[in-house]
Length: 236
Ligand code: APR
Image (cartoon, rainbow, N blue to C red; front, side, top):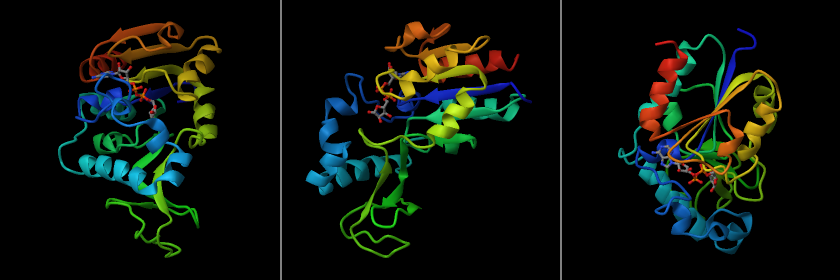
């Protein structure tokens, strides 16, 4: 149905109850390692082994069998199935919990932990093992040029044209589990609100930096507030 699009932005908070760390909570990732060391091109040039080890440990945890989609991920997959229009999930997360929950209309704007990119030929491949200086690109076969297919600070997020095209026509914009610290994602709500007759809702554990930019806000753990909100949206 035209004119019935929902865009959902998600952040690390939606995966917290699946056992994956957020970034800026007191126990978050940036309380343990420095962004400059593990999430910038300069950090990677300075010490590639440290950066590979940082993502290798997160990748193996994600694949360990301890991390599973939670009811919030499952509710968004239900919304995609049952909503009489397009539902696009734009996630800042690099985990695959949305996919495993059943979401298929999905954009990973900050890349994916289970993919590697070759610095030489640019090929992006699925990757479930540790990455190291000995890793071979499956395409050009060169060694030691594979990096995590993850967008670092100072790099350009992925699929921005597709994201802004959807933001330009959505009737409802949901922001779930994100602190509103990082742009361009933190600016999406303002882009949607610039149009009349749109509905913007923040669903988060606590008010984000952009809380006042939303028409509505619902606070609580994602695994509780998201299924309830989807149920109400679907007229359940
Ligand atoms: N349910 C809902 N929200 C939660 C929960 C929960 N159980 N637990 C935490 N949150 C909220 C926090 O209150 C916080 O507002 O999730 C948000 C997580 O914020 P961040 O840790 O900043 O993560 P995120 O917003 O996704 O970070 C954006 O920053 O470091 C970069 O690339 C990284 O994609 C990441 C980006």
